[in-house]
Amino acid sequence: MNAEAQGGSGAPVPIGFIGLGNMGGPMAANLVKAGHRVTGFDLAPEALAAAAETGVEPAGSAPAAVADAAVVITMLPAGRHVLALYQDGGLLAAARPGTLFIDCSTIDVADARGAHEAAVRAGHQALDAPVSGGVVGAEAGTLTFMAGGGPAEFTRAEPLLAAMGRKAVHCGAAGAGQAAKICNNMILGISMIGVSEAFVLGESLGLSHQALYDVASTASGQCWALSVNCPVPGPVPGSPANHGYRPGFAAPLMAKDLGLAADAVRAGGVQAEFGLRAAELYAAFAEGEGAADDFSGIVRTIRQRSGTAPQAQHTAPEAPQTEQNGTPA
Image 1 (cartoon, rainbow, N blue to C red):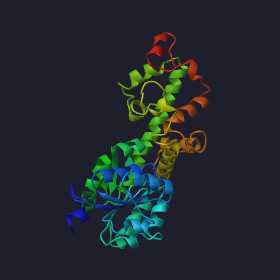
Image 2 (cartoon, rainbow, N blue to C red):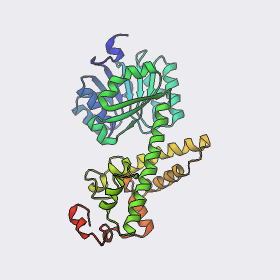
Image 3 (cartoon, rainbow, N blue to C red):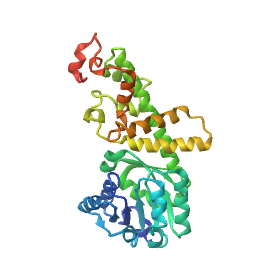
Image 4 (tube, rainbow, N blue to C red):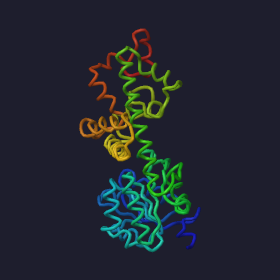
């Protein structure tokens, strides 16, 4: 196989990209910026048009997008979409023998393994490579990829993953990338609930958001949910809480990932009480008031259930000056 088909470092690769939405669109654009020829398809005409403006060559169908590709990347909503597109949608049949299929969707581990097996049976290579970093990471090219598949497949994919992200970790055999993704997001979901509960408790005790943040961010309570995606306005200017909870990582996506984790927990007989409860809380939040919000907006649900009034409690009584130092009233 020649260097172009292999995807060697620095060599332009013909890529078929299926799924050009909020995540896939920026990822495909970054591949174009890296010098690769990207032919794309999406069922939404507006997504396809937006991708075309970034240099992606639009195709009339998914099979047409992959016909001349050495590598096919998919970013789709669920496992059923991946499996249907691979088989019934004709993607595997349309691709040239030896094409590398990289699925960046977040799907069930069993579905990821099923997609891998289908690709191999059709004479191709496969890698599951879900991502972490959200839309911001997709746009900035700072995603983290968690890859499952053979070492050769990972090596072949690495230059392309590097064009779309900052880090790629080979987690093991087929399905291992998805396993790492749902485990990571179970940690994140539980952490965000814990951080949110702590802030609501602090409000009830008259503790300012800034004071709690200044302590916890430099003490044993430090975590990503606090220091980067802080769920209350004030302490972290770039967090969604300071921008009306506009999604960086939407609550419905967190609910989906925690649902996948919960399914795996039950199937494996794992005792994961916090993970299962987090899945329940986020499912309710995503179906209700959090449907269009960042997952950190769960703090408002916790606050409402607690009956607290944060507007009167952000600033500790003994330190009213903190309100002038960036903590919202």
